[in-house]
Length: 19
Image (cartoon, rainbow, N blue to C red; front, side, top):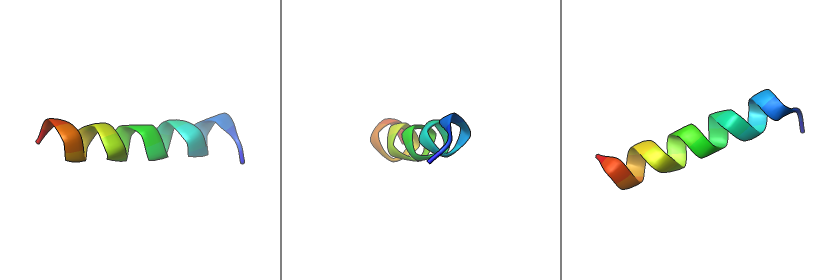
């Protein structure tokens, strides 16, 4: 897993949490 993949997962999680 690359840092980009991690960031992608985090962004997705954040988006689901925020919106």
